Amino acid sequence: MNLSIRGQQIEVTDALKDYVDKKLSRLEKYFDAPLNSDGAVTLSTTRGLHTVEVTIPLKGIVLRAEDESDDMYASIDAVVDKLERQIRKHKTKVNRKFRQEGSLKTLFVEDPTGTVATAELDVDTDDDDFEVVRTKRFMLKPMDVEEAILQMNMVGHNFFVFSNIENEEVSVVYKRNDGKYGLIEQG
Image 1 (cartoon, rainbow, N blue to C red):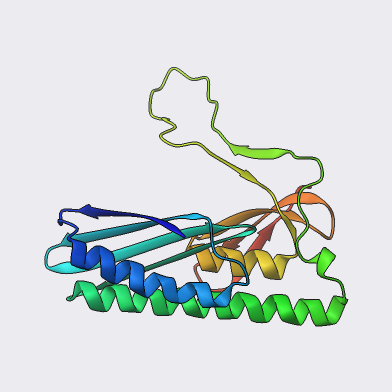
Image 2 (image 1 turned 45 degrees about the vertical axis):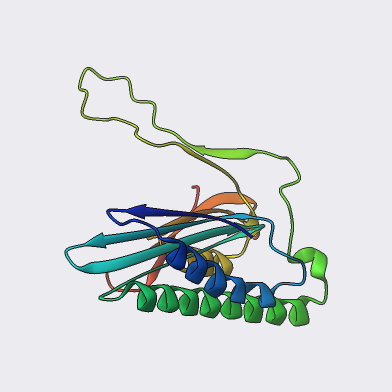
């Protein structure tokens, strides 16, 4: 796995880089083939708190974890533990689904049309209050609602856009204020 390690308000020493590499290499034991994705690691300090954020995009999922503590090395350890829990949880779900459906082909379906969803805002107004500061493009992987909620929780977001495998429509799952989940479908 190729890691891009950067520091915000902290100098990333060789000792920190080595420690991050050593700890994140533990994740490779969960995969059959070596990881050839580009992971991003951000180390930062704010008011005495050391924050570590790791994002590893893989085929079909994005692993993301963040931790904050008084010690940078403790934060790195905690982030790696969180990533390991995410991987184990995802593998358990995939294995359960594999046993139920009996076919591995139904688990890792690529978008056959090759369409790309784009999150863009095109507003024609005199007011300059609306400014798009970032545009993301991503493939919509067909999945069920349960898997979309799992993916949303793994990336640490409050919503997740996906292609609903049940009705082949674009849907959104989101986390409600009461801690439960909501689903938005086309009408």
